[in-house]
Image (cartoon, rainbow, N blue to C red; front, side):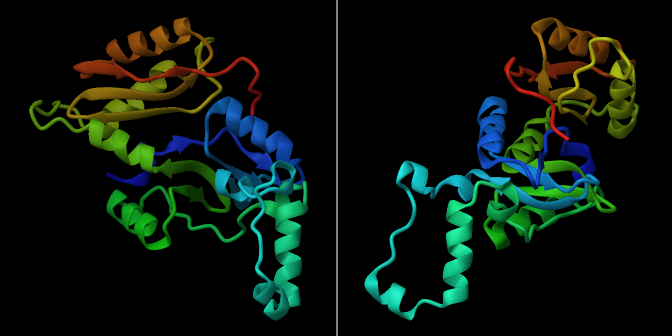
Length: 231
């Protein structure tokens, strides 16, 4: 499988000029562990994760340095650490060097990158724009879509995936939140967020009505009411 088939589409992002408190509220409300950081043109400039916000003086979790570290510490490095721990702007706290892939990257390469860099998620880039993100959870979803006991559909899984996406595109109930469609051996898996149970049901019915789809597994979840749209 390729990245484009299993990635979660990006609609949640945070401006580099946003407050870390606004970013943290978005992550908690939307139940995501990281947000792409974008500039005014929508170009990805970094990523903000839970790890970037773990050590904060506001909650007494900043790392403590021993006396030897303080004596031998480099002044430039100390200044950078101070900014990262005390700034309230996303641009100062985010991780700027981000491992990325494109939509044609095989999942095997993505798993290798995650292992090599000890990361939990990889943004998917098209040109300079982030269009999706693949986390360890996406890899598990890809695994769940595989059922060796089921016969293959006469239509290609990619064609069925596009047909399911086309069936919901433009509908009044289409979710503005990420909805990821994975089709394997004719079984359509729906992952992501919707605003209501009625919308979730409509997605399931639309997928069931696509010729060639043998079965639909609906994993859609309702998004909290207090979460706003990202960039």
